[in-house]
Length: 406
Image (cartoon, rainbow, N blue to C red):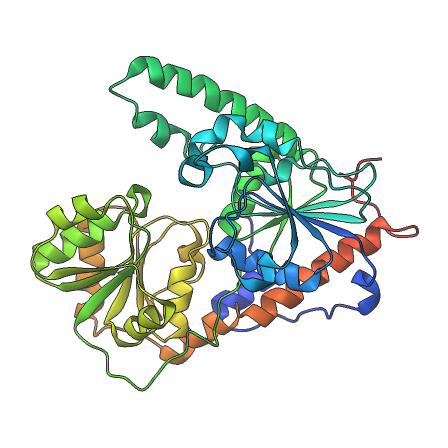
């Protein structure tokens, strides 16, 4: 991995990097089109989108599908233009199964006469076609996962059906080619972490700016509550999150574990769990915050592109014990918890035992400052300053991007 940028270095030190102020001339009067893969709920990506909707309330928001009423009022108030997939019966339950036709549906997006296109993409949003000569900034959560880093895991799920596995492999090869070609229509990439910056370079051969997603440090704040004797997991209950490793590690050692989250893995995880593990299902942000404030430490066994949950926990001054891969490795170290090298139950249990044996080292003030370096106002200033920079360069007399279509 290349050396980290100034913003990331500041985050690791628990400082806030200097931020260039956005001049009103940089964005004033700009005609903007926003593009998001799908609008089916408020997750981390939608919270990033919300900032741009606030900044550009007159923009048209293009998406594959829009499940009305599931987004924040700010997003719902936008002029939202879904693709023809919106009319498919049952699409909100089964839209992930429509992956093969999503690139075709993306061709329906017509952004019209605009000065700037901004896509927020982990799937096909980057496939939008900007007008000739108009810059396209892609805020990239990851290159299309199934086509790149998630390809082998997806195909392994069809190991007992060789014909389907072969067909799926052919489809994913096609999606990879389509995704790679779409990257050429992006003039500027922004990555959510150093992990994704490296992945963009490997998959697309492109440089990118790192601007980490925001954390709501006003909501997630510490409180004068004593730390209790339970560990905590907050996660969607899906296979790649590796929750089974936390469940089995705590069950085998008799440590208390509270699991907050819902998903298709819950039944299997409950079967693996011993009496020291409890499942609370989906909970509100306020309940999650309460558990961050009281847990002995957050366990984070998954490899994430960024990892918003550890930052929320740090904002509440909770220690974090995380797999030392992906985005969590960029923000967690032995001063505020511990990382461990391999995604196994044994490695996680060893990390817990070592952390406890060394007196549970943790610097609460540093944990909080790490989170504050990624606070919502800082994200807002960073992303808007970058868009103003791109817009200025694309205007007459500016410095054109080498990827700007002419």
